[in-house]
Each structure stands twice: as structure tokens, then as C-alpha cells.
Amino acid sequence: MPAVDRLHTWVINLDRAPERLARIRAQLERLGLAWTRLAAVDARALTPVQRAALDEPTYRRRHGKTPVPGELGCYLSHLEVMRHFLAGDAEFALVLEDDVLLHDALPAVLAGLVAQRRRWDVAKLSAVHSGTPLPYLEVAPGHRLAVMLTRCTGSSAYLLNRRAAERYAAGLLPMRLPYDHVFDQGWRFGLKFRLVTPTPCGHDEAIASTIVAPERRKFHWTRRLPAYAYRLGNETRRVVYGLTQALRERAGG
Image (cartoon, rainbow, N blue to C red; front, side, top):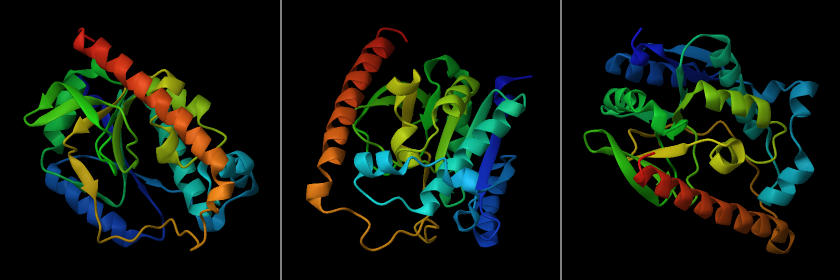
């Protein structure tokens, strides 16, 4: 079986959000991508076991904010994708949140990534921040694989292999940060974490977020000092990791 045929697409979608599912279904059908819906963990109905997956004291210390149930639901939903992926025989998983915008270049980018599968473990296909990318390999016309030197949040679209899913399934719990702040820590998980630039996916601004946060969620700056210290250390590690990975890739991978 050709490797590109061993790619399984998962769409994370809440049972109470059928309109969001309809929007992404239309996009996937337009691009000719087969897919499977995964019922998202609903923050309105978290079980005691699911609530216990959050390490709230560490979250507050590292993030400087009060956690909200929707973040935990999102975090656990992505972990459910990993478990379903590993239970099957697909080689790659395309993980999509249901508020993503899929651009026409996506199929070509996916084919290029699969063809260059030894050069990455996780490839971000959408981004909230630039990530200060250092591109090193073209995977499709106009799209290059890159190492990131700065923060690049968002988890609405990414491709990963089985090695990455195994590392995440074993090491993501308990939740100590929002999902998109932790899964990109390639140095922590021993993974080649990359960004495709420009990204072949975006965020549908017409769709409101299902993660509802209180107005006064962020702590006063005096209570955020531990979070600032954590962020400084984390971003230092990111730069060191990024530069090291960039040197390796430019030396031939």
C-alpha cells in the first residue's frame, strides 16, 4: 500500500456542534479527503476521572491563568485521537479541529510530507503565531518544512506519525498547560516537531470558540511571576532545540 494511502484523517467535533461538522465536511469533500469524526470530550459533562487529569496547581503556576473546562476537554480530545490512531494500522494521522479552514494546497502538502516522512515526526499545518521559521525543505510548490525558533500556538491542524502518537499518549498527562502550549515541545518528547510554511490551513474566524473563558481569568502580574519564569525557560529551550534541529537538517537530516 502506498504510504500516502496509510494516512487517516480525524476530525474532532462536539456532539452539540453539528453546524461546525457540516462546514468541515464540505471542505474535506471538496479536497477529496476521506475522514473519521471523533466525538470531542464535552467540557459540560466531564467525569471525575477526566477532571482528575488536570494538575491545576501546576497549570496556574506555569500559565498564570485560571484553567477552564473547555481547555481540558480539548486536551483530552486530542489524546483520544492518539489512542484511536494507535489502535489502527494507519502510518500517519491528520488531526483537525472542526473550526479549521482547509486551503487547496493541503493534499499536495500532505503528499509531500509523506514522501519526506523521515524529516519530521509532527508537522503543524496551521498556526496562530509565526514561529519564526527556518525553512529547509520544500514539500509542495510554495510550501516548505521548517524548524521554529519562537512560540507558535494553535492545534487546529497537524500531521503526526505513530512514534509521535506513542510519545504523546505516554507523556501528555496530567494536563499542566493548554494542549497547544505543550504538544509542540519537541525537546521534551524527543520528536522532530516542524511547521509547514506558509501553512496550508487556517482558522475559520466565522466560527466562535467552544472554549469559553471568564473575563477575569488572567492573574495580576504579581501572581504571574512564576509563569514568566517558566516561559523564559521554555522559550530558551525552544531556541536551543530549534537551532540544533536546523543545523542537523541543513547537514542532511
